[in-house]
Image (cartoon, rainbow, N blue to C red; front, side, top):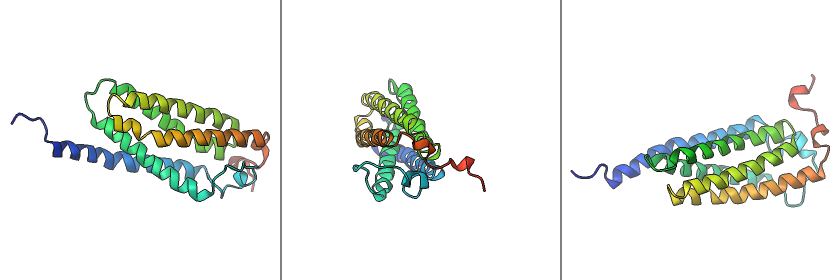
Length: 182
């Protein structure tokens, strides 16, 4: 036998990675939002002066899981590419942006730090662009799977910026959950 692995074995290896990465990214992303009380059910968020471009809640509930699935699939492709040149740096960039992504909801919805959340989302976008460029030589499809995420991050950054502009005193609107007294 001259082959190291058959095409079927290679597909199964990728699927095994995807069976771990996709649920992990979706679960961690969902937990980040859930634990920070993100969304329209948040009293503080409901008290903000929101711009007209703010989508209804169902849009966020639909878009984020789809984006997290794309992220998980993209990650699985690069993890599957053992021995690829630049793989280590590409994975480092991916995990930096992912951790920053998971930190955004607690910063925005939990700590009510709208301005800092804006700077964080710009950082996430820049890191995702760098990740896409790092993924492209390894697996072009992995880089392309990041494009919808980058588009959404761009929109979310604009939305975050407009919320910051319309609510200069956002941090003081409703007390933080940790400082509320019973």
